[in-house]
Image: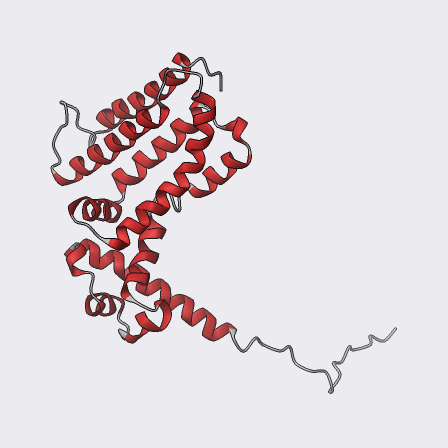
Length: 229
């Protein structure tokens, strides 16, 4: 039996391409290059070097593109910091899940949040630069980021307030000390490379000691408050 060849109709229209796909992809790539350039400039020159000229040069792009895609230098820097900020990026999905189901927020979840913050800040040199910047001078942009970070954390603290309301544990104060300790130890380890209370957290064993202390403190708070979560 003869094979019948399938032929395409001459009138068949070719598949249409999205006209905007190219320009949109190019825009996205350009924006990513500019955002990445902020981090590179921050590493090279610290925060005083975050200028339009330096960032555009690092990205290999025309400085006008900063204003075209971000509106201003501050908006570009804010975008970069927001992507790097642990509470606005790394922890956001975790926090959203906990807020939706408050019964799942217990000692292990709080420990996981704090450990993740500790690991992120200890490893991320650019984030350390941002923290130094915020501690070293008053800045409207960094204040804005800090306020947004507080808003995200407030969702978790509101749940904890209800869990600890009948106990003698001031959970907000306890967490404030733990977070401040994490910030200070991480920045100290990066800036000085020396020990703190005889513990070197640049060393694996030293870091493990601090991680265990974070966990022990959280578990002790839940235990003293007689909260079985």
